[in-house]
Each structure stands twice: as C-alpha cells, then as structure tokens.
Image 1 (tube, helix red, strand yellow):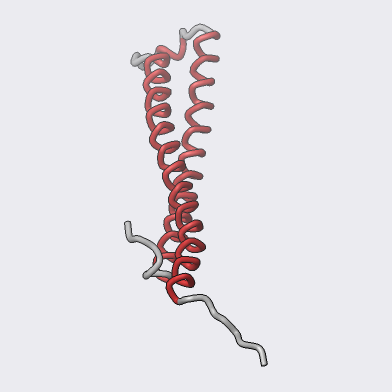
Image 2 (cartoon, helix red, strand yellow):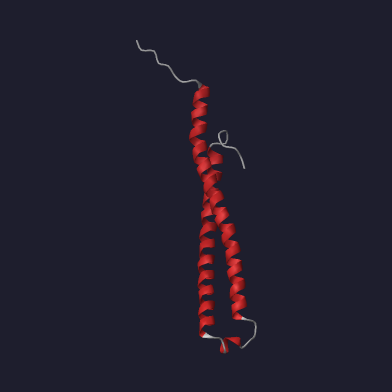
Length: 116
C-alpha cells in the first residue's frame, strides 16, 4: 500500500505566490517602461513642436518668401511630430491594455498580488 505525501499548505501558498507574482511583476515592469517612454516622448514632441513653430515663423505671409531649405526643415519637423503622435497613441493603448491585465490579475488572485 502506497502512502501519498502532499506538500504543506504553506509551501503550496509560497509556490502560488511565486508563480503569480512573476506574471504581475512582468506586467508592472512593462507598464513602468511604457510610461517612461511616453513621458520622454511627450517632452520630445513638445520640443519638436516648438522648433517647428519657430522655424515656420509668425508672419501671415512668411510662407511666400520661405527658403526651400527652411521649408524642407519644417516638413521634417512635421514628419517627426506625426511619428511622435502616432507612437504616443500606441503607447496609450499599450498602457491601457497592460493596466487591464494588471487589474485582471489582482481580481483573480487578490490574496497573492499586492494592490497598487
């Protein structure tokens, strides 16, 4: 007759905690990384917008006498701004999705995951 030995409930709890915490920590690390990128990119987009505004000037007819190299530089700023805004939108979607995953983990495993 075989005797079965089971792990202690404390050991099971520790194993569960380690398993779920590794996922929660990965999600939180991804959220922090995306938020840092978004913050830095926001600063760069604002700086690019300021440079574009400065390069474009503020006279109503300045575009009529603009040098071709200046028009090219302004077009470059516009492309950078568009790319920056597109990336910010992507990051906002990623962060929202990651926050939803984090919330789901906390709702499924409330006794294993620390709340924010």
